[in-house]
Each structure stands twice: as C-alpha cells, then as structure tokens.
Image 1 (cartoon, rainbow, N blue to C red):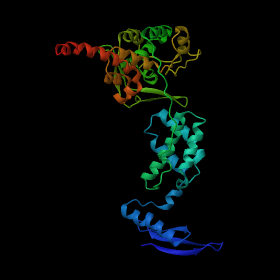
Image 2: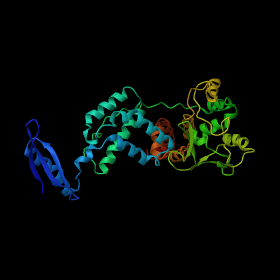
Image 3: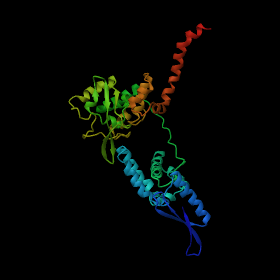
Length: 365
C-alpha cells in the first residue's frame, strides 16, 4: 500500500510525496508532485504495476553518474575484447564519451541530447569513430537496464552515420608478382598476404613451425597487434585458428625463409628483431618503396587480402573455401565483402547452364 503526504515549500507552494514499500519491503518515497493526482498516477505506473509484473526500478538508480558506470563497463569487457579493441574503446571513452556524459545522471539524459551529440561528432570525425563512441554509451545504458537501474533508454532509435563503402583494389597475378619482386627480402611476406589472404597481424606472427610443407598448409593460430606502442599476441580476429592453403609460389619462397630457423623463430621479423610493425604506403617504408617501383595501384598491406580473394574466386573456389581461407566468421560476410567478384560469376553461370541444357531442350522442340 502507498500513502500520500502533502508538504509545503519555502516559497509557500505545496507538493505531494508518495510513501511506499519496494519489493524488498524497504520504505521508499518519491516527492515533488504538484497534485495528488500526479502522485497517484506515478505510483500506479512505477510502483503498483511495476512490482506486480517484476519491472520495478528504484527511482534513485537513475541518479547514478554515467562516469562511474562507464568505468565499470569498460573493466567488465577488458578481458573479453582483443587488446587492440580494448585500447581503442578506452581511448574513445576518455576522448569522446566521458567528457560529454561523465558527470550526467543516468536518468537525466534525453534522446534528443544523444542524437545531437552524434550529429556534432559526425561533423568532425569518421563514421567508425562515431559508432565506437556511441557503442560505449549504448552499452552503459543497456547494462543499466539489465541491472534494473533504469527502464527508459535514451539511446534507442539513434540515427548513426553510415560508413562509406570503400572500393576494393584488386591486383592481377602479374601485378602482385611485380610488387613481390620489388619488395626485396620481404617478397615471401607479400606473397603470403596476396595469395593466402592472411591479415598483417596473422602473417607477421607466423613462426617456422606454422609452415607445413607436407600438407601445403600454413597454420594460422595467432595474431599480433601494436597497442600503445607495444606488441600484443592474441588469437586470430574471430578467435579461431585455421589452416590456409599454401600455393606453389608461396611454398617455394618459404622454403628459403625457414632455412636455419628454429620452430618458434618468426618467419618475418623486423630488421631490429622482434615483430615487424605495420607498413604504410609512404616512401619511408619498404612497402611504400615497393609500390612506387612496381607501378601497381596504391593499396595497403591489408588490401592484399582482397587480391587473394579475387585470385581464388577466378580460380573457381566456392564461397565456403574462401571464407575459411580468409578467416571470415560466415560465408554471408564473404559474400557481402566480395559481392562485386561473385557478380562476374553470373555470366559464367549463364554460359555453363545454356551449354548444359541446350541439347535437352532442343530435343523437345
């Protein structure tokens, strides 16, 4: 049962207070209602009905600061995320989210405020940065809802910027060969990237033991990333190890690389030893110089994965094989990523089906 109390303010105005018991039978109150009817309506919605259907939320929970919840949320996910992602999320929190929302109470934020924040951030930063920042605020509110702190989420139905589609650059086998030849001692690494489709972190984490010449396979069991100036070794992107086919040019190149190496020695260490840092397209990196000397279209080391996919598709590989080779989480992701490659198969399909059924249908005419 709830009871209602009328009280006076210093200004002489009157207000109403509700006294009630929460599900744990602790006496609570909510004040500030201008009329008794307002107090009764609030009680009916937020106490009586909520307790009966199990959706009751302590009104005081909405006064918790977002800053405190944000730190808890990041800490809870730290060991789940990859080190590189954890670093990016922590940085986004410090730069974009905490300064804006850290001092605000959980229940005082409105939908329009969040949308305006997203719009302002979108005018200054990329869609990737905006979506990462929003995902933090959204995650805080969803956790608060699941913990029973709040029922209204001001982060629902927020319009986010769309990430522009980046057109893939595909090298022909001849162009890839030229790029590899211009890469000097790093020729085997370029072939692994451009024919086997490994990510940079996967390729530079390979050791001599990961090369299986008997089965013509490369075992991809780990990946390295540079986080805050330090190298962190973890599992591949989707958390699963995989075996990648090792084509003849790659096998021939790697036979020279593994000579004299112990099983745990890196295949492609930096000139100073240890893991090789990511290479940019500028002339001050060996990869940038190779791009310039070979005359191939400018593309990043990561983009060489697309060339591997293109060569595999044109060689007749099906989607599931390409998915496993590239380490995609699903065949649908492979199709979405390389829809432009598979569209070319429609012409081939038309020719092959016409050839297959021509005699059958001509006999029935």
